[in-house]
Image 1: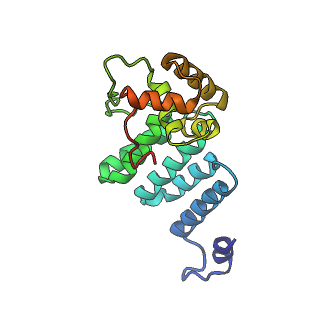
Image 2: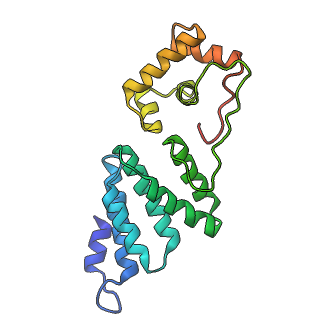
Image 3: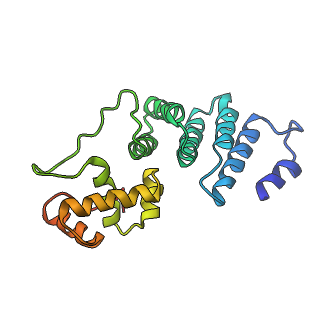
Length: 195
């Protein structure tokens, strides 16, 4: 509300809000949609377009958030992810690059020029990559709903993966499956990125 008020009441030297001001206002409007949910992909796309006057880093940030919103709505986010990744690479923006890659990995989207991460697996590892993704998050104390949101899958699908993991490991509860996985070297200690 304050940002909207400033855009109306503020007195730019030119008398009207310029492209940069309009772009930041569009980004503010897009960010506001995240207060009540996962964000509005169309508003993030509009914000990215508004930064088209030359603020490529801000465009990439908006494309990254657009991809998050698209994935949360079960829509194709490849174009937004690829656009954000290309800019991050060109600018050497490592934190943005890593954030885009993490989002792409969780959504199972392959980015051009990025080799899929080779999973570190024990020799007798019975788990699929997706089952491991689920179990890693369960080990961090996430609920099925939280795991689903992080991996862009339904809560029911998380439950199915957990049932398969427990059957494969001979566990009767989630906590027991996590303990067995640690004992067998199927899971490693949590990293800062997952904590």
